[in-house]
Length: 109
Image (cartoon, rainbow, N blue to C red):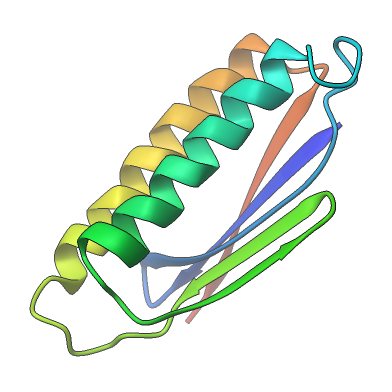
């Protein structure tokens, strides 16, 4: 099971943790894992390489963590929109693959 945890801080999606494996195919040929991995990579590249927002980023064997730490960048809103788009995309993937993906959203005030 792939678990996607998103954290809202003051109503804004700012943190992400993705871990696990879909187990829907053999290693390297699991289309569900490939879809999630591709979406996560696009999110990270958009925020860190295109928008150049300061972030904390950790990549381990089966886990990725991302936290937008920039609070004053002029393009911060664009980064938050990237996060919202990712949430929409991963939620749809989760509904279509409910046996392989779970999405959790936590809110911190």
